[in-house]
Length: 117
Image (cartoon, rainbow, N blue to C red; front, side, top):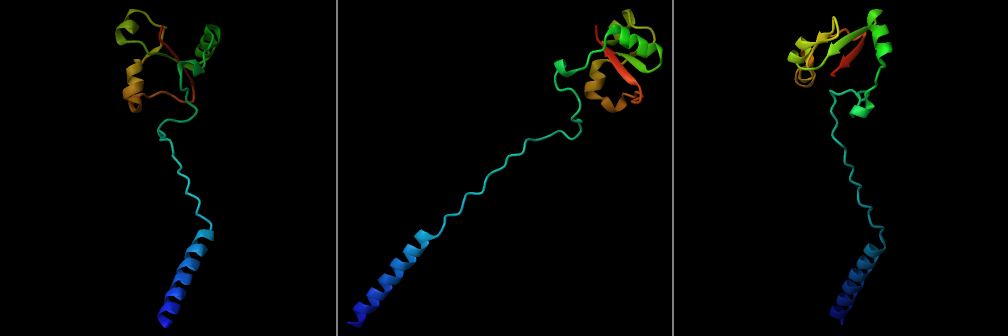
């Protein structure tokens, strides 16, 4: 009889343990947060698309340039610059901006106006 009581007691303990575990709240899964990679070398205020690039009317650009408040930069190829360019415009081909920006030395206190056509 003691063997039966021990088996019964063990069975009750097992059932009680299973019942208690079933009543415990399940842990919510930890949400996965995915961070998009960023380019820390590119300031966030730079235009992303061509449509975002601010345009200056010719009269405004000319007035700023003649007043000494702007630098004109021709970003076309060296051969296109040699053919014809705005007087005193700097020739800095676009690929220099794209692959070697550290060597582009412009006064950032002035308005930098680029043109390509």
